Image (tube, rainbow, N blue to C red; front, side, top):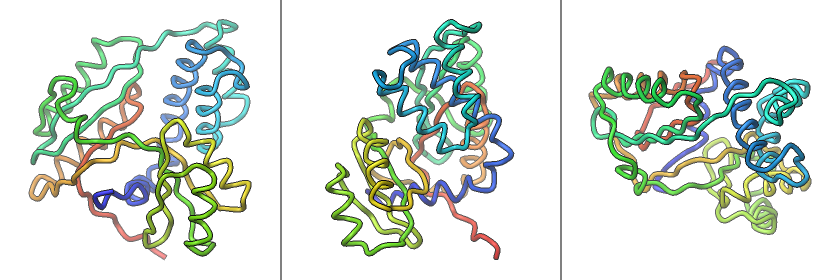
Length: 244
């Protein structure tokens, strides 16, 4: 996996979770809306909606908020139509960046994303200019409560493709479409699943060097935009050690 660590990225964001919870719920609400529009309001027959609901619960989104989002998207409440648009470009130092958005105003979103790239020394490019450097995977983070060989057998039986041992956790890789099904099977087998998310895994990572501050700021500011669902990059970012 070219040294890529989903767990490292999670630890970088860990201290921001509570402050950003409202924004996280807004983003997941939009994903629910898109899933309902595409496949209906019944998660039993809409696998995409079922996956988004699993993601919502993983992020401690209240059940009544989830239900309200589904009703809103299905027309029982006033609904908004969202369009999925992906932007690609380079940050300072040649770092590749992919920005996935859901928006009800593509002009606003394009302007906001372009402004941040320009402000922090990057440049937007054409679709496809950096995505060829990434592979989309499901990534499950599990703690090291059990032996690696035992976990590997459980994970492979559940449909996982690969397992990587990090310092603190196991990172389990799946096809994106299998992510939540594999995570559920792992939990049923007694594995403590910390997170389960789709990720774009870079073929190679880039050290931003002197541009580290600009790259970090670009990623953080993009992530804070309500229209932005996910920001993927191939930068090597330092992880601050947690205080005891």
